[in-house]
Image (cartoon, rainbow, N blue to C red; front, top):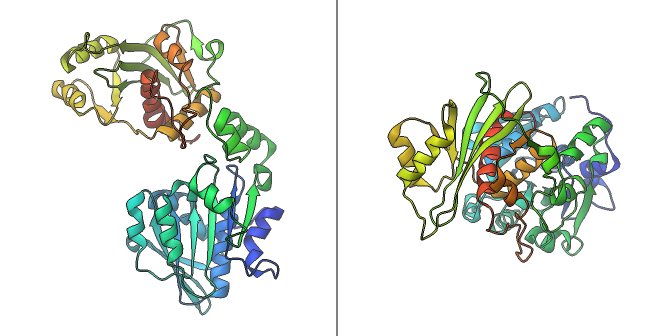
Length: 411
């Protein structure tokens, strides 16, 4: 691979371990904005260090999941290291074997997605570990992996985008980097010299609010205020109902409720313009006095859909009884929604900002929720207030499960 010119921070990330003033450090933390060149310089630096300082040793490369690790790092490594090292992957063993002349080392891949993941890494002895997106991993997994680094000269490599300022990694490791004998480098998109101003401007246009401050400015800030402050009735609402078009794809998204409201949206996706419009909504306030059964909800759903030929219905994965009711009649395909709240909100934010998501003027309950849907500022972690969120939930299911798939080039 032919590299563009590296920034000062990227060069330091690649070479700190071989500089007299830094070589006694126990590791390095790189955080900051997205697309800032952290991953490339961190991964390359980790391999350069390990192959220069060790032979016949074990190392760990960790991500939130093996799948995300392969996507972000592993599939890129042979290209990044071309002409320097030979990289062989044993996929069934989640293992990379990297060679250069007589030097050969083994790099095991681990996913740290939840508290139980720490058990995956027990028992192995390591000469170093690289954490990609460490803020997405549980503390127990990270510290278990660090505890396996007992080879003399072993070091820790941490890479992440910012999160909540109460996050354990920010509190215990970034703020205490000097105490832990770690180098700390903060990256921005300007550190990625391969990005043109046009591309930087495009990324900046994707986010507003907390996501802009975290992913573009690279700051560890608290989520506060409205979740979707970018929603604008003048910008995102259309007055005319789009005619049925056989070239369009239609979807329904449902947030199931019995005591809480049952909210559903009918969406029109236009492949030509790559835009989705919520053209109709169903919003039934149940409660103890007005509670209805799944058969009644199904009739409401049939009325919402009418003659539209929908691709499938996406629904809250916990709504098993409603899923069974829909499947019983065999009229529609049902897909369980990706219910990742924060990533779903992030996707919805991007689609609103980039002009891929619109709403018909009659979706008034959805508009009311846009004006009330807020971050819980009393929560230590990022969380929304669980009120006025039913249409917001079905919207998030649609964006995370359907529109994200339709617009792969964005995400």
